[in-house]
Length: 248
Ligand code: HEC
Image (cartoon, rainbow, N blue to C red):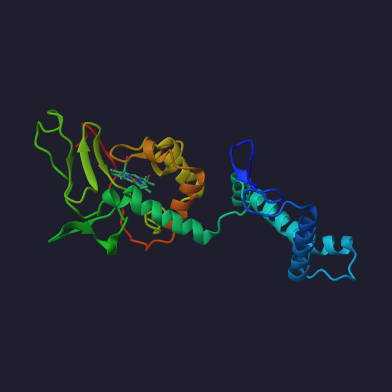
C-alpha cells in the first residue's frame, strides 16, 4: 500500500523512494557484497590483519600527499627567489644578458657608425659600438642654429652639437681605445654618477648620453653590459675629445 512521506513522496513499505529495500537484512547483505568487491579490487586477503591492510593501502596516498606538500612548499615565490639568489649567474649568462640589454636599450643608435642602405641607415657591423669615427666630419651648425634652440646631429647620430658643446659618442668596444682597459667599477661609475671614463676626477658626461636613465639598471645588469662589451670585436678608434660650448 503506497504511503505519503513528509515531502510528499509515496513509497511502498520496506522500499525507499528509489525503490531500494530498506530492510536491515538486505542492507547487511549489500555491505558484505561491497566489502567483498573492495577486497577483490584492493587485494585484501583474509591472511592480512585489518591493520596490515590499512598500513599497506595508506602508505602510497600518504607518500603522494607528502610529495605534493613538499612540491607546493618548494615552489613558493620566496623560496624560488632565495634559490635564484643562491645560484650566482655564470659569466656566460651575464654576457648573454648584456648583449640583450645593449641591443634593446639602443646603445647602437648613438655608439655605432651606420651605413646608408635602401632601408635607411643600418649599423655598420664592422665598426659596431666604436663611437664617432675619428676621421669623420664633425657636424657644423649654422651661426644661429644653436642660439635658435636646435641641436645638430651628424647623419649616423654619433656626434651632436647643442648648447652644451659638441659631444662624440665614445668607443665602447673591447679595444684599448674603447673600454678594454676599464675596471668594472669605472664602468659602473660612468652610469651611476655620469663620470667621463668612470673616473671621479673627470668631467660629467654630456648629452645625449642618457646615463641618468641607464643609472636605473641594477648593479648586475650594469655588470652584464660590461661583461658583454668586453666580448665585442675590438675596433681601434680614438674618439675626439668633447668640445665645450664657445670653444669651437
Ligand atoms: C642618445 C645617444 C646615446 C645612447 C642611446 C647611448 N649613449 Fe653612451 N654616449 C653617448 C655620447 C654622445 C657619449 C659621449 C658623452 C661625452 O663625452 O660627454 C656617450 C658616452 C658613453 C660612455 C662613456 C665613454 C667614456 O669614454 O667615458 C659609455 C661607457 C657609454 N656611453 C655607454 C653606453 C651604453 C652601454 C649605452 C646603452 C646601454 C649607451 N651608452 C647609450 C651617446 C649615447
